[in-house]
Length: 200
Image (tube, rainbow, N blue to C red; front, top):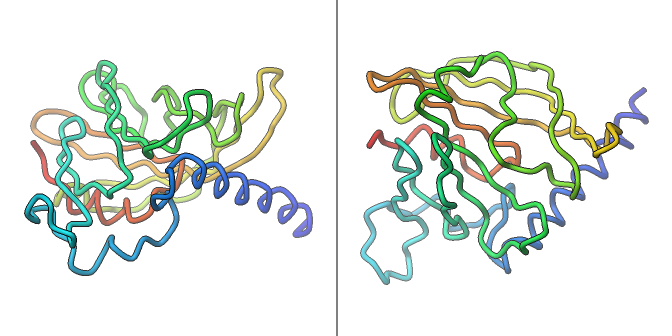
């Protein structure tokens, strides 16, 4: 059984790594250590500073310290997305979503959310089902929120399972409504960035 799981997980890890590397044009990709994402970085560093590894980026109702390879995507209704810069038009692009408004209010936090406009790492596949692996308290924008971790299955147009991968979801209840963050691409450092984000 372990051999079967290894055979399934290893190609997934390689696929995510290769696709992420191909979508960033040489910039750090999700899951890669950047070396500039921790020590000495500041959301308020002066523009043009060589040491500025991050900059405050508004993403929906949050302001997040963005890594250099992050690129904001045009919001679609209640869904704001951030992608890795340099993706080819027809390639799956590493992305995460911040969801608010009526859409977030209708999300069942114990279920994986898929209607975020974000593809799976293999071209032509979509997330179709998921299993809850863990639920625990988490800091979201300095507030007490929740994090759910899922094992998600991606299938092709014929319904064939192509890969499984982890999906992290954070949720936070605020005076202005619910906020849900969905990460299916394991963005490097996102746990810390979500915790240290601020509400706009």
